[in-house]
Image 1 (cartoon, rainbow, N blue to C red):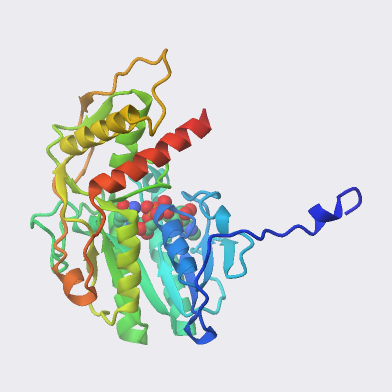
Image 2 (image 1 turned 90 degrees about the vertical axis):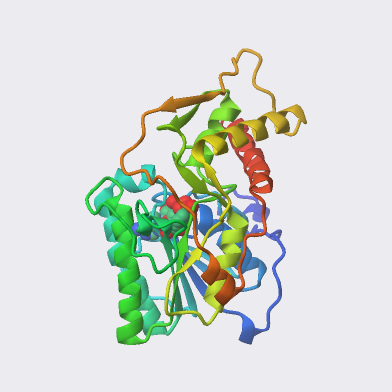
Length: 355
Ligand code: NAD
């Protein structure tokens, strides 16, 4: 290019995180839809570290262009901007189908699109799996249980979902995605896995996605009130993202195909208790000098504040993970506290960068 120094015109990146060297026969070509999102980007990291060829297909509807920046230019990595609602021709050995906005704020922004992503998008990816004979894993959700009347929730529980409320686009979308997945398995012999994921948190969650952990961490870091919906006695079980990634890969590599498998932590706490834990985590990391103090002019108003409950917010959630333990030998390894420490450090750095 006229005027460019040669070093710029021909510059290629040479420094990447280290990846394992796999023999060609052991190296798989793996498609991760939604790979630029929170969970997807951690899954891509792990698959890259393991030495596979990874193709990411993401529309950036709720994902972020920076989450995978450290792999761009790596010979094992390819990023495609595209929508799963459109068919795509690729040759792959495995498909992790994660593409779908996951926070209520994101999936309610365009309910019809969320349904199309879950139905048509899943159908397209199952069609691709059928053509290429790739193994297919669907990232389903604990939301298929709705407001559960059984506690904790085993995979055999059929759920209690409001089919037309504000969360229906996501809950019913995932239910139809599961039905489609098993339809392709029974009718066309597609080799499928279904993970029912419970609340997960960690670095790379979006700071403004409205989910419990991001809401509380950001409020505590900014010295603002931590808003707890209703009386705060609803329960949530929180799993750190690295445990989820292990569970997804273990399930994909297992021979368990016939039924969905819950992947989640049984570390259940009330929303109020999570708010208090997060507040004390932020305070102790601040006291230890690991994260910046509040600016001198900012008053610290980070106390719990009760606000009205939101529609269809499930009152209780805790997975029965007996099946995960039996069929894939999976159990979470991270304590919630260790995960929260990592997440708070990440969010603090994000907020500092945004200033
Ligand atoms: P996320 O919103 O961070 O990531 C979803 C990704 O999918 C984003 O990068 C987004 O741009 C992409 N995407 C959305 N619609 C698309 C489309 N039509 N075509 C292509 N790409 C599209 O969400 P997440 O938390 O990383 O969740 C990932 C998956 O895990 C989702 O399927 C979600 O339902 C499931 N899940 C997550 C949780 C959790 O706690 N994070 C819990 C249960 C289930």
